[in-house]
Length: 424
Image (cartoon, rainbow, N blue to C red):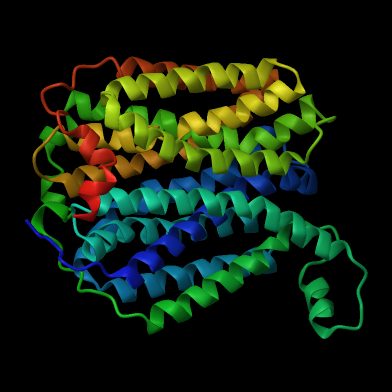
């Protein structure tokens, strides 16, 4: 098996920044959703098209991105991905209408799909397979930090736009690009700058060859009838879809929930969203400790049950308890994705790249979760619509009682290995 003796720290830092950037941009969809609802007078079902446009790109481009990684260099793919993302961000500023925003989110989603998929083999080559769990946890932490920072930066950009125009040329240009009544678009100036700087760094950076070990390749011939008909793999795929429904369903409708049911909230609801994301990152560290001492499925049961109780408190308790409930939901969400992925990988002793690519398509749940909540909100109201997530949690909890004992003996080391083993 491929082993790397030396760690390529510049590449690892670059991948960490990629995940910070992804978290920053993903969180923007949730931050801007209430603003866009008011700006375009959108019903809930129509508004849900915005996160749907972003996450549907994962289902369309996840597998092609994996195949492209085997055929083209990292640098070429990253440059094309970030250039397309920059184009999408510019379109967001130029076409400040509903359909323009939908198109923009789809383009940006496509670019970030490629970035995330090819970052996995790139990170493996930079640190080696044995060290991958430790550095994967680090990238997930940076993802949460980016999502935490995003609402704060958005609030600052809106406040900056509200200031009267002074004599500064930059400020006049800023107000010209972001017209009156479109303050919500100001944050995408920051996104444009981030994309542009990332392109410059990628152009200057030296990348390893994209020659992967055989088991890391996404092999289209392995997408055969056996994988498609594997009941356990299919159930775990549905569990991943259910998890993404919950994660993005909460994040995209959280702010709107407080605007409707708790308008007297003592802090900005966007800050609650920021803390939701940062607690998702903190939960990764908490989960690492538990995975060292308890069985993988026991940890999954505990986190799913905790999320189910927390979302109930968030929906039906008073304002302060509702805030606490949503924050705890973020914490309990943290470990579900890597645990479910690990269960799927351990069903087979080969074709791990193919299985990972297939499971990554489960991110489409991030498109359907917010959309279903939006549609149900139009019929019954947002609070009853949120109860749909309870069905998703119960399904994941049911999956955690499945029999994976034969092929998951080493699952704990697959998810998050101990720090000592990762550094060896």
